[in-house]
Image 1 (cartoon, rainbow, N blue to C red):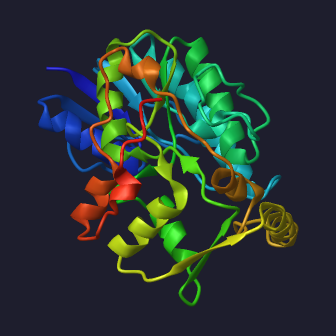
Image 2 (cartoon, rainbow, N blue to C red):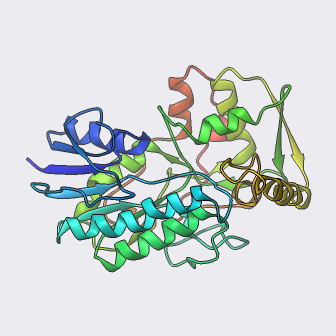
Amino acid sequence: MTRIAVTGASGFCGAHVAVAAAARGDEVLCVGRRPGPVGRHVPWDAAREVPDLSGADLVVHCAAAVGDPVPGSRAEAAMRAVNVHGTARLLAAAGGRPVVWVSSASVYAPGPGRSRITEDHPVRGQSNAYGRTKAAGEALALAGGAVVLRPRAVYGRGDPHLVPRLLSRVRRGLLLLPGPSVRLSLTAVENLTDACLAAAGWPPAAYNIADPVPYDRDRAVQAVLRAHGVRARVRHVPPALARSAARAALTLARLRPDTEPFLTPYAVDQLADPVVLDVTRAESLGWTGRRVLADYTAELGGEAEGGVMARTGRR
């Protein structure tokens, strides 16, 4: 029996990892500020403390500060304390134990050329604090010999960020999206969970993790809205106009730096251009994404359009 320390086990991704590990017979240590759904709680404030990992055979690091804070704000400093300095403390405590570190595709350089992103895509120029701090944290993890996973737009049961934010953007039956539809990778939380538990035996490196095929943005959005019982029309805004509006919103947000802007350049960037992850490296080691968006919408009782879920070829 393996004893797995899962950081952030009270959160979205960490809770899924903890439950799956326990279900396969592992002993789970839930490391974080709050207890996880299973196992024994090991208190840890990632922003201030060194965790107690004694007895753990493997560490899966899911704890992270997320969001899109105003640059220079206290929220950005708090994010760095967790995502960067917390990583340094975790690696020191791991003491040579295998570490699987959950990063993000947000570390990749923004702009064109992301229609097929391999792990060799440049990691620089991130457009928000989350991307910058995750990039800095994963650099420490890679230098320390960890396996780094880079999912994109993780969704699933219990998601507190992606889908709730999408639903909140619907106004009077209308959802505005920047530019025409594009292909985007998404990552079911179950696919990420499988990778977290398989990756302990992988060579230390970075690995993209995503669903087996990318999705048409507009069709995927409409499927998710229907599954949640939201009737809304999708309309397109010119990307240049959306980016101007995001810059204006960010400028206004600086007057209240402790609140996140309603719209940011990062959010526009993530929706306006194709972003497709190549998952060949992880697949070559036996991992494969078993879930697709249709499974999620079906479980919610929604209708999944065949066009959304149709396989469009391996990447």
